[in-house]
Length: 516
Image (tube, rainbow, N blue to C red; front, side, top):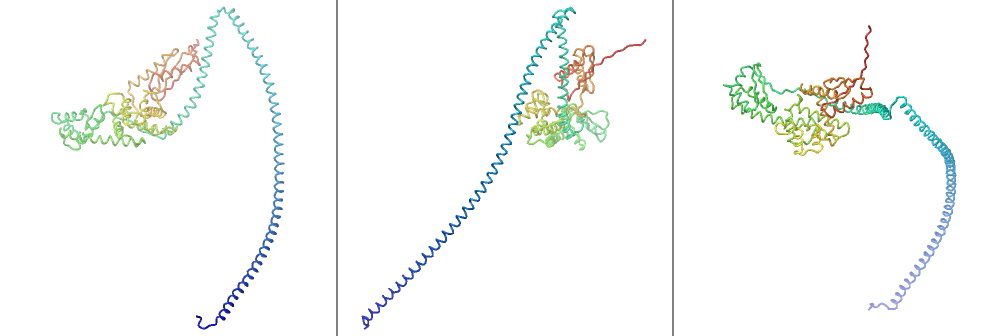
């Protein structure tokens, strides 16, 4: 099996191998045990060193902690001493204040006692005075021979005179105070606003004059047997006045839009040279379209100048139509733009809503664009139009209240009223009719003369001042102040007028003698 090898040799070999393995095992075991012992010794030494170092660190930490605690304790003691010192100082201050209050309390008690004593003395004096007055009244009655009723009337008259004097003094003081304060504020606001807005004087005509290249054109306008002028007047709805005025024709109509259409059509006919009934109708139709477009453009331009945004197109058109309306010579469109700008500036000065003020100012006379086409006042028509096209309720109120028909419900409506008065009253703005002007002056003088004690009165400065002469033997200086106020109040309640009227009451005494 083993190819002739001796089994003994094999056994010896196996024994040696096993012995070698065993010896190797023992050797490795001894080496391992030696290393383990060495490692255990090393770890033991490391632990001892670590324990020693930990003890050292613990001791050092304890020492440092003790030092820190001692330091903090010292600092806390210092702070405590400082706080205690401050508390002692405050305690001494409080004690001093307490002593002072006690002294004041004693002083107040003394004064209170003194006041009570003074009141008793005053009451005694009042009783003594009342008794003396009663005795004097009885003595006066005996001396004058007056009854109690007559004496009462004299006393009441004296009281009335004293009351009038006191009322006059109070009125003067109150008026001077209110006038000085309110006028200063109002003057500053209005001056600033008017300086910011400068407007031209207005001068509008109620007729349109067309210049002709020559007098021959008059005959062509009249036509054969007047057929052209009849056709023109029938198609345009205006009166065409052709008189002896050289090289000029006058167009007259109560409707300014018709007058403008007629003017544009006639100028086009004159420029074209062909004047006949069919051509006249064609030119008037063309002029109507041109004026309609111009109205819209004028409305848009006015809205931009007034600083108003998002206005309904129909309202823009009505704004443009106001260009053809005047009031006492003042163009309504220019007036409305002026009122809008003034209202907006006033609103900016006082912190109100400038956009509502501008809209209300621009639209306050919008009814005048349609009052010749529909029945109703320009205020009611304006409110109706603004409501129809969705305007703000405050804007509608500004339209409705600008002539005082209703009460303003917001400050912007009051500003529109103010701006309307400024625009209408400024120099060069309007031309009043002579009849209305004279009537207003007569009404002013009539109100003044209706009061007792008035000698004569004069309306001066185009109705801006009312100068009143009183009878000095019937009106005293104090009563003069009262009567001036009463006249001013009556003017405010009974008359309508732009701006303000100065009531100037004069009292003069004269003594005349002749040396003979």
